[in-house]
Amino acid sequence: MSRKFPGTVICDIPVSLNRTDADYAAFNEAEPIQAGPPHPNPTKSFWTDGEPGCNPLATEGSNSPIPESVDVCIIGSGLTGVSCAYHLARMVEDGTTVPMKVAIVEARDFCRNGGHLVAKRFDKMHGLTEKYGVEEARKSPAIEEHTVSEILRLVKENGWQSAVDLVECRRVDLVFSAEELIGIEKDIAAARNAKVAGFEDVEFLTAEQVQKEYKAKFPAYRQHGNNLWPLKLVTKLFQRAQGAKPRSGFIQSVLSAVFSNRQAPSIDLSLNTHTSVESVRPSSKGDRAYDVVTAKGIIQADYVVHATNAYVSHLLPQFTGPENGVVPTRGQVIATRAEISRGVLWNDNFVGNEGFEYWFPRPCPNSERPLIILGGGRESSPWETNVTDDSVLDETVGGTLRKFLPAVYPESFSKSSLPEFEWTGIMGYTKTRDPIVGLVSTSDNRPSGEYVSVGYSGHGMPRAFACAEVIAEMIVAKRTARAWERPSWLPIWYLTEQSHAIL
Image (cartoon, rainbow, N blue to C red; front, side, top):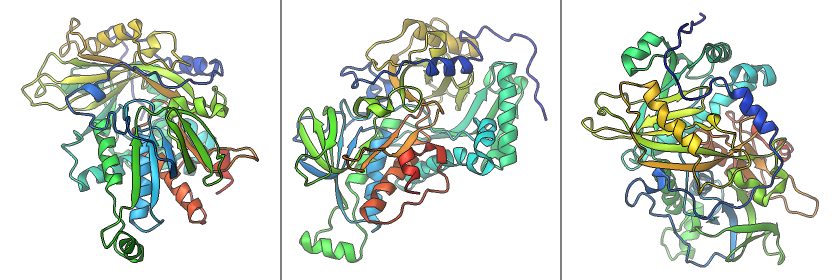
């Protein structure tokens, strides 16, 4: 049934509406400029500095020697890089492959991820079914469902709920214009026709229902959602990978003999922060396939994983530019207080304006005023494509973010309220708005053991963990001389051209 959008202007939202086409145009017109390295002094994020001790691995290994030789070198210590190490450890633990030595190197402090953990069940489904067919398009929400369900399973099985500040709630998509509603209705119809898993939980709310429940006068769609502290999750994943042990059996019995009957580690995992990588080249010694050249020396490795997202073209120039690469794009976020208590305010995740804005409350007692994380506003300023400097703020975007919540929820937020944190971060955008995953195309004189998982386009939390799983499985398949099989939930268009050749 077709939904109707209220015919009157409800309030003065301080953002430009229906800007998706303009966003794509700005992306397509971006110059093919190779990314530089990450800025050494980024703005302070709530996620890295929001409470004392929230990043215990911040400078881990920064003053330690780098390992000289490893099986796998992972460049980047965010959710992708650490998830890849976790999946490798898990496969050693269950006997799929033998123990290995893995190094993670990071140019700055450990992990700078943000965002919320929600699977999009109908986003882009109309266009995807037209381009790829129903069966393949169904994999777009499937990979996100897989990611969310696996992370929730891990968190609960290990009792990490409090440690990572897990909040199980709902995601509410506020619809700001009739044009946006038409596009959503097309995606909804395509998702319904494709019988997308979990789609039956999506509900439509009228503007009157939203006003009654959330104090905002817009129609909306609502589904299950979650949020957590990304850095705390990544810290737990690293610690879990580092402490993994092989299960009992032949492999463990052999290793126990080597380790004098002590239980052997499944993975020798090291972390060196503040260790920038300058280049990756074929090994000059021949003991391993690659030399990973860092500011502290060379790490030899058989496999290299580029978990560098927006910065991938710094080391792999073939990923420069909008056509087949990743374009760095700066985003901005604030953390600001509501004017009412947690017990009165909503407890859900929100998205608005075609996904340009997202916001959700941090956990706190019901009697306290919650801190709201709000990201977006970049459509109110010239599109910040080919920008890798996250050491500064954009005043125009910052002004938009300050005005946004009081305009949407005039009863719950004050126009005079100032953010407690404000920061920028660099996202990596692709022309499909989906990540690029798999084996890197190589020349004849270069080894074939480099992998990428990059280009999440501002939507990494519900995809990076699964994409890293794909990379880990590719490495183990090659290491054990067996064929790699594409998971049932992985969209074919995520894969690099070289990865298609190994299917």
